[in-house]
Image (cartoon, rainbow, N blue to C red; front, side, top):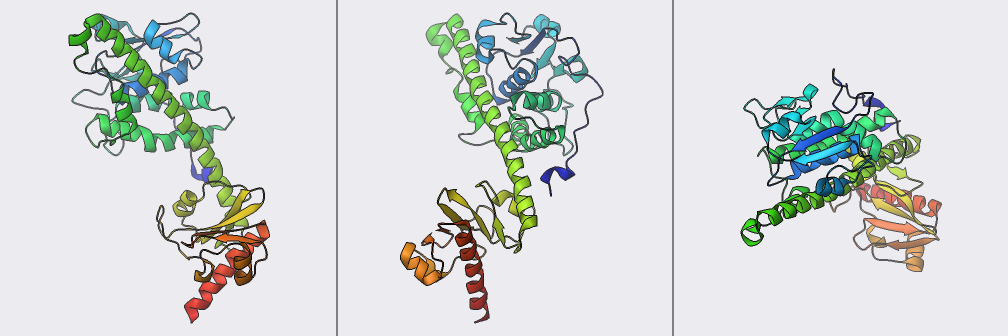
Amino acid sequence: MSLLVHQQVLQMPDYTPIGFEQNARPIVSLTHSGNFHLDETMGYVILHYALSPEGDLRGRVLNGKADGDRLEFVRTRAPERIAAADLVFDVGAVHEPVRGRYDHHMRDKPLREDGTPYSAAGLLWKDYGQAAIRNLLTTPVDDTTVTAIWRAIDKSLILPIDQDDNGVAKMGKLSLADIVSACSPPWDTVELYGRQEATRREAQGFANAAFAVASHLTNTVDRVRASLKAASRVLQAYEQAQDKRILVMETGMPTEKVIFEHDLPVVYVVSPAGPEQWNVKAVPPVRGDFGQRVSLPEAWGGLEKKALAEISGVPDAVFAHPARFICGAGSRQGAIDMARLALEIDAAEQKA
């Protein structure tokens, strides 16, 4: 069973986004100068990975377009520069993607299906996100997986940017939005150092922010890819399980998210914890909770090795945590036996 069976490839727009034409012509992209936020910073990062990932992300901000780099990036509010640019985002008061215009500061804002206003980053993610993902991935995947990654990041990262930038909901303290804002020069930079130096520091701050956002997006894409891979393996292992309450994974990987998203009746997850140990971890009643659907036997709690082996009857038992949410054995079979015994003991206690 595959997690991705129900996914569909996103419907492409009925226009060719600027920069995706067959001739890889140079592209001038532009956003506003002055105070910067996560919205336009993410927008720049998306365009970088979609159109010119081999270019210098920071150098393009600080030094302009380099030889061999098809993407030029400009930060200005000059009307003539805005009019001449190929791609304009978060400035210009025009939302017309077919012409490369991706602003959202109008009375009639572009909206998601649920009514949430788009940010510039959200608008660019619609048209350029999948291309950025393909260029970020170092492991080949099919279009269905790219779409699944796009959807997951749209929900977990891009939508919160839309909400934050439009005043719907703050992303919170120490969020990516706060990290970007912290890259901005203090308010009195012009007063202390003059206009020219303030402009230089502003560009430096934006370049630093772009680097941080790019690092976050790169890691997020790869982690989501791995999460989808894990989900597929978890579901396959569940299908093969003789006792659906015991999920045996041949490699350690995240399982809780899939268990709860698919409402699986798993009680214990058995997986390797190293070359000479397999662990049994109890599933909580609610995702992220500290409790357990079924705690390990009370008599096991806090015991190790010989003492645990004697009371459990599993010769290679290694440990049982005092909180009774995890235990381990020296072999795969030993761990499975501990999980089965824990269920049998719980069933007997329920009957008593």
